[in-house]
Length: 283
Length: 269
Image (cartoon, rainbow over all chains, first blue to last red; front, side, top):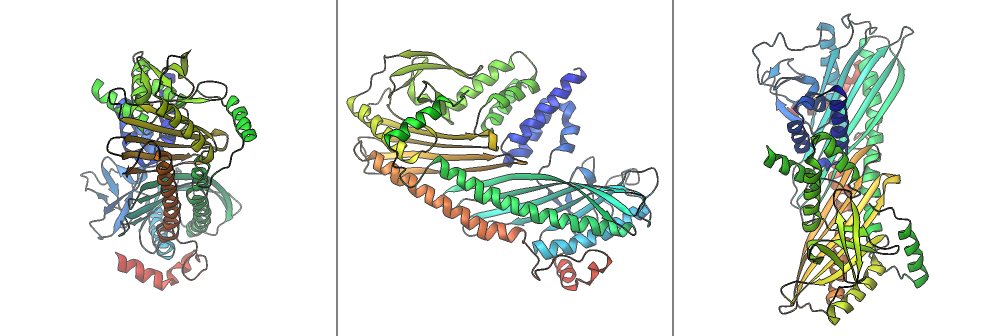
């Protein structure tokens, strides 16, 4: 297969995964990987799927899994810095450099509190990784990348309602010389709400937005504080957008599909309707 | 592989959102990248539209038709209201071979089609079609299909309503299913998928439209209530708008001062 061909196949695969039923995204992702094994790695790293929870054996705490803390079939715990299921060559697998690991612990403690205040339950994990030749140090002058993950599940109620919320914020920290830094964040929230009482229904999917912010910093830990407050604002905005799309727009579209009230369409409106149909470019 | 290939394509077609199939078909062809894929995709699309997702197609300047397994006549489809026969090319995705006449229905079904037209006019504001057809073998069975589409790619959404009913005139039993799908895809990919099975008794040709009207109204009222319930309960319990103390988080080294949060966090582990 030549390069341009696999490039086209990648674009087509991503396009499909952006449009097919989001509730089935994990199934469709693995199906496309079966059709195009060469693209599997690229697809797995660029498509957000619902987050899995894993147990850290060293600390007993739960943590979240994504492509950024994965090595083979194992995932690194942010609490112990160890991969589970355990791997033979733990030392060879990616870990943050020493000060970045300290920062990672601070970020995890900070977002654990954020999680408790906003989610009252759930699981959070933050992973950081080096991007520069130079190791990250206390000064905050060396940039790095990371991801913030949050997940909350609601088990089925007596009415058969259930749901989950997954937040995925992938970020870049780019310090400037003048004491300010640029933070680029790509945020996705996967929200799934299901009801099986009376009538079956699910509202499922994701919204994504990109944010670029400039903030001042004094040392490396202020990057964590800045990421924290920017993420807090993004999540509040995304929550408003999700509320509007899931419970506003979607409901309005159903109302436009069928009206409970009789429309009392008169003959002239019927004719206008026919004019509309003439303009309808139907495939 | 070929059997699993078929099932993969079939399952992706079933997971496609309402709206036009052009992009889906194009993407699948690119991924499969071989000459047989055109036919395979067309076959799967056809099966899907015949059996599950009845397809609204434009037949004349002013009216639509429906593709389903229930209004097939020989190799073609027929429209009982417009008295047209037509075929559909599932590879090029267009109506072909529209032919006038040759469509016969009983007086009863003829009148039912008129009443469906009037009913649809009162409840379906966008692009729709409703048909009543008789079963090919059993004259006591009548099918009613209504399809309504609200396609608005300009504003990144598409919606589809489909209701299907089977009336047994001898037993007075009406069974069927309402299926509603909405796809919203501006800066994301969100789907509403809902529906309800219908089972009513004491139904005949005379009151079938009243019963359908009642069933569809009830379904829609329940759906609206469900939206509110999920919004008020489940959505609110996933992530708060503000923390319980109603102020934003004090990030930085002082974050350790949130003792309540910390204790609760440790307690939860």
